[in-house]
Image (cartoon, rainbow, N blue to C red; front, side, top):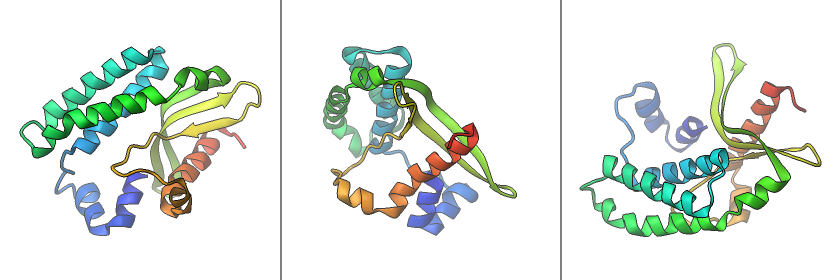
Length: 178
């Protein structure tokens, strides 16, 4: 989906980064942060990490990401601010309550489903849950952003919502679920 999103934003960048591989996307504090948040959530769910272990894992992962890719860059000085935001975000998500009502079906599930001919949909679903009572599935994708979210604008953004619709369609097709 990230390729589709990049193509919609700028076809030239999509060509340069994805098809021709002439350049790699430059590292950024936002990518380092998003990776650390995602990894922390995955580890929390897979290993039942409590809050302090979740935050400690995030701190270590984010610092390593920054040291490996951003040391010496101006954004490196923003690391403490991002660190605090990440700890706050991870403190606010009540994983224990969420998982009380749901069974974990998959964490970071790969999708590689045929569309037509040699064209495939490729993606990774962050989390798939199944409600213990109703049997309904819940597909989640963790998002980090540089700006605050206003839900009504996100719900009106067709491209943004398309990712979840495509995930739902191809996941259901892969697992033969209505």
